[in-house]
Image 1: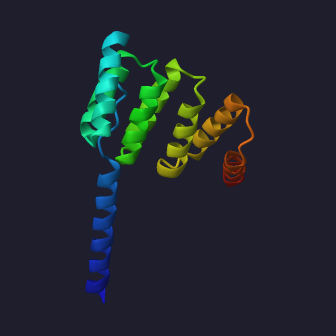
Image 2: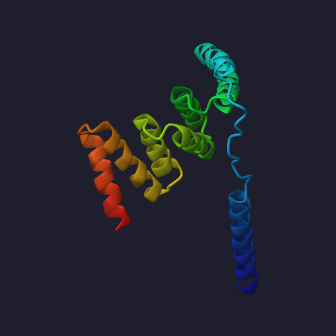
Image 3: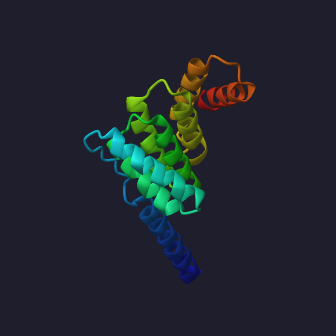
Length: 159
């Protein structure tokens, strides 16, 4: 009996250590912003779009990252990059790019909307999600029953 408990404890300790090791993965770094160069950024934006249309997602990500580093004010490219990163299950990195985009384009509702979704569903940051859903609602001024429901649900869950 003592031997069996020792084995269970050893296995449990091993599982905890594996779990903790997974939590200690590499941190997502903030996107590096190079000196602004909108003309060159547009070239990378177009390269990214072409790569994406050809199904070359990794090349699209690389091109759009270059575009955003050269022109972080291009909210459409930031959003496209974040959505592709989300699709590729790089949730933290997608959120980081959306946050960077919001520093330069805080009045773009779609950036708030997508950051709210990623924060709620994938990063489980309910407070951040609620802030960005509310901002999205304020910026659009439209009644979106689905978003209203999500806001009500988050408020209930956070109380």
